[in-house]
Length: 228
Ligand SMILES: *Cc1c(COP(=O)(O)O)cnc(C)c1O
Image (cartoon, rainbow, N blue to C red):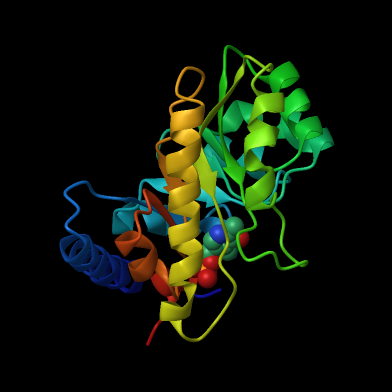
């Protein structure tokens, strides 16, 4: 993929302006974090992101993560946003400060085993119920966290979702709202075990709606790279 610093910088400025407008519309005073979904770029191209002012990247694959971290671990904070298989946990945990995509108890067990002092994670929720999507269903979230709670080194800090892909961003609003309401309920139910503050939601086509609905982290890829 062809990328230039100027393009990424201009896209970033526009996205940040739209996020600020969305915060204003929603009466929010906090600022969500922008995570660059870096799957489109190879190791060397990631330098462009830092030049353009990006400091947080999200990786989808365990393969190559160590190499990217060796090269850029001082430059970026790394999160893991892709589907994570239990047998890959050891290749991911040392390099990332947050895993967005936890959705099975066997994965929680493996994370607990491989964590140092602690590993911070989000629960991936399939709010739309589409069969093609990872994540646990909203109705199963409370029982899931009750089971996960025994694994003391795994600290849930919030929820993540992928909304259905659509050309009309407004149609994603009910899914984002549902994730926020679920987070609010779980935050109360698990207040003595977890501090559930994060909502990782919103991508290139729908981040403004997600920010209006309370996203604390938006995951953006193509909108930062597009040259039109
Ligand atoms: C690629 C990816 C994104 C960003 O998608 P864009 O539509 O390119 O913004 C966000 N989240 C996850 C989990 C991804 O894999």
